[in-house]
Amino acid sequence: MDGVQLLRLGKRLAELGREMAVDPAAGTLTPGEIAVVADVHQHPHTSVQEIRVRTGFAQSHVSTSVARLRERGLLDAAPDPADGRRTLLTVSARARRAIRAWVSRPADPVIARALPDPDRARRATELLDELATLLLP
Image (cartoon, rainbow, N blue to C red):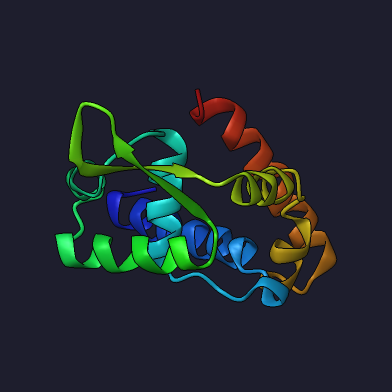
């Protein structure tokens, strides 16, 4: 495998992962909104500026995403006790429940849609499980 193949594989796996994140019943999140929720989940009590620095998104993009996510009840906001001008964000209880449900779902159906041949889908799932044990901390 060369670097280009590795990048293409990473992109394809990210696409499949995003497919799993879409819940048609709950409405869809944009990839940027997913990234913001993931960042806040990893860094609770964080500001828009801190999210911007970690994600590399433009401040306006983060602010717009945060506003939409707050409207949908996925992020909670509270004033920063150290600086009342800042707002600190956390993932809402509703969103944490959805995240727990999402991470416990198997990826098999998404892989089966990507590879309609059942034997190839099963083999790909086995290989991905093996790669996860080798490459993820």
